[in-house]
Image (cartoon, rainbow, N blue to C red; front, side, top):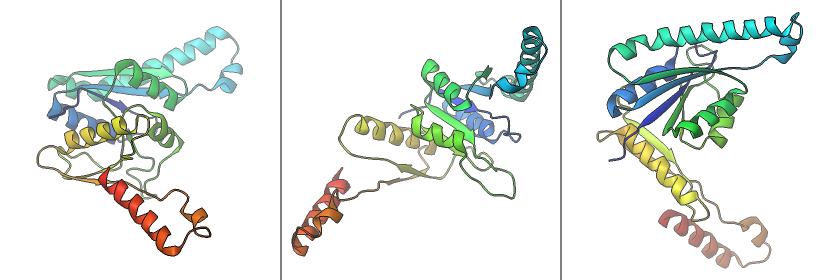
Amino acid sequence: MYSLRRILVYASLEDEAFLALEQGAALARRHRAALSVLRVLPKRDSLLKRLQGRQEADGIQRALAEGQQALLDARVAPLLEEGLDVHTEVRWGAPWLEVIRTVMRDDHDLLLKTAEGAGSSDGLFFGSTAMRLIRKCPCPVWIVGRPATDRPTRLLAAIDPGQDGDRPAVAARVLETARAVAGEDGEQHVVSVWHAPGEHLFRSRMRPEDLDDYVRAEHEAARES
């Protein structure tokens, strides 16, 4: 059975509850996977330009990075004590870009990030970083919205089963990851959204019964895929 080898947790500055880290640790225990925790500090060039000199700016950036590194190290210390393979890193730059670079550099199998608004009464939502990661990250992305569970009981895998380009390989990886997260006792569901290309254009050019046949054929092809 497919097993996770390397898990990356993006711990944003707003992620005070570290929900993604808790879920990542639960998965790392189950799969005996290596766990990496990344925090990205966005550069504030306008603020740094106001400082008196380059040396002062470098010193502030270094102090900020060291402070965040110490925070991450303290947070993962209990995980290290229990024997998990955990690494922490603090980087500067655009958060979504640095996360993707880390995934590509270390070949991570899964990325976890806490949802915006998790733990508050305002509700959950996907911020700009989450949406960029969902669109561009080369590995599956899990946006965590509630406290960790050692073994999620029901998972939904959304795939595009088309045969063009790398779609089959991407769909296979999503399904493999979902199976790994669900485990043998988990319940897995698979969903795909289909459409009949050009249906609205054909309405004025085809007989209704022919159009119905075309739509049914596209539906059946999608189901078979």
